[in-house]
Length: 171
Image (cartoon, one colour):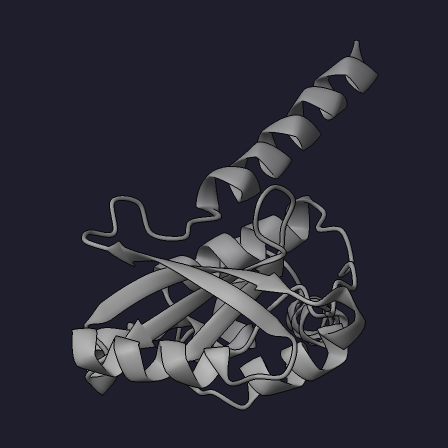
């Protein structure tokens, strides 16, 4: 499983990303004007954020229901530890498995899965159970996304912390 740590964001990175949240189609020039920063600086920062893995692929913003996958479920997976590589490869081969985390507790892995309906989820679950190294699964169907993934609060905290540090340095 991959778990590389991307570059830590600084206040300018946070400002750039928050500006992109407001206008996802903004060019480096438009961002530089909005933020009062040189275009080359914005361009270099965006390149570094992408290359470091801090900015993920655009497709991660996609709502799966726009592709016909209206059902979301979370599968707790118990695996044979000696087969972790084959499990990872098997899960990667199933497009409906959109996220996997190694976890503590009763499950070894937690998989986020999308399906077109309950019969499709049954098919996907059986496909997962056929992977060499999967011992058992437990499924929880999401009935409503109460709070979608969000990071703007964390970005604002980076800005607030930097402003607090600047104030302390002045005093």
